[in-house]
Length: 129
Image (tube, rainbow, N blue to C red; front, side, top):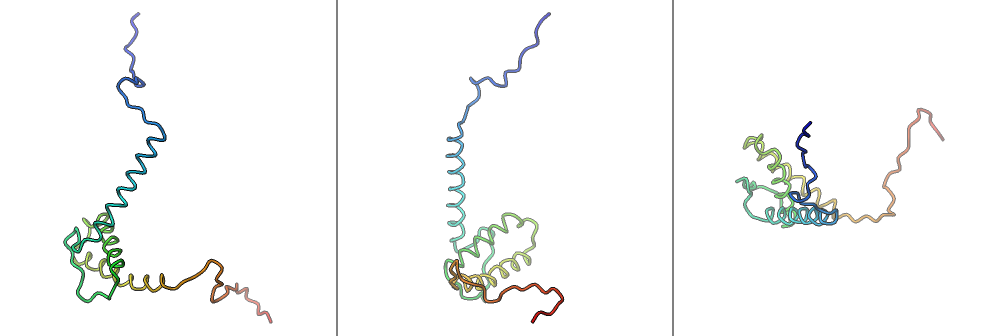
């Protein structure tokens, strides 16, 4: 009786093996390249999607403008094909408007040991004196 031909799925002569360490280096390189590419795209004055910032936008620092552009480009990458031009303008306006609030919150310095301004007390329905 003839043996059926064997399927050599584990034939090492045709496949390339990769160690865990090599995979880690490749993954690190890929993650670093994505991190380096995104901020450079965000720093460009014109958006990759042809949208121009509105003329009445609040005064933001250059870093905040870059952050808004990066967020906008990320939203357009994910959902841009499903949004109309009006919706894209609304997304940019919302991101720009909320960025000034983010700047103010980031300026307020807190330390790890700072106590909250108000203490949470559970209302149990009974008045305590």
